[in-house]
Amino acid sequence: MSVSNVIKRVCWVSGLYLGLPQILYKLRRRDVVLMYHSVETSKSGYEYAVTANNLLQQINIIKKHFKIVPLHEILLPKTGARRAALTFDDALADFYDAAFQALREENVHATVFVPTAFIETGITMLDGKPHLNWEQMRYMQDSGLIDFQSHGHSHRHISKMSLDELSDDILKSKLIIESNLDTNIDLFAYPGGKFLDWQHEAILNLGFKAVFTSVKKTIGSNRMILPRIAITRDCNTTNFHAELSGMYEVVNRKPKIYNTSL
Image (cartoon, rainbow, N blue to C red):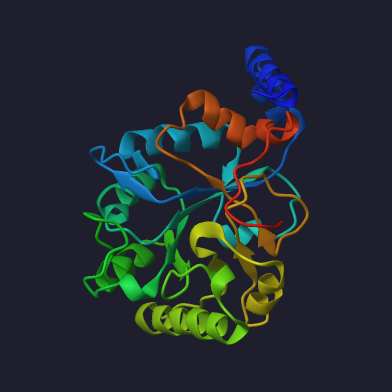
């Protein structure tokens, strides 16, 4: 381990020991967007899965430090309470089976980013993990707690697409969701979090209000290109507080980034 990594590790451990996350909650009042994928009733070993119980525990932690709001509200400049928004990528069927029940129990809003090529086609991204269908999505949308936005059509990494390919893929997704859910699609999350810098503007020019990355950071002043904090199966309570409070950024620990910019 290099000297710089040793120093970072010492700062990290010392910060946890001294209760740095709790201090940062009070001093560093930045909004956050959390990124989930699968919410399981039994553990599968999938890295981006949490249990329903863990989700409930995490929601209760978030509520102590943030006001949980619909994702569109995060786009507005912060004027009062620190805000958090919950997002779920890939529209996996266990969102209906597990996550929706937890969100409804806590009366919490969330956004699901939908890769439309996988809806009611029999094609799945992950073995043993089917996707939501339109009937389930309409039911959840009618609850007033869940809204659905674009995760592209094919779930191909946008960074590998030309402008024409990008436009075709994203607009196809937008049209399919709007026609099935009778809603306005104006938010986009990068599949796999990968992008090139020029693609932000290209997507915004397609009529989207904001794009969401997988850069593991709290939110600064930019409300059109927004980072999200990915929550994985090994995110324990200590790590969760460190993520939410921004401790990862303060101790200069390199954020986990799935792209080449931002």
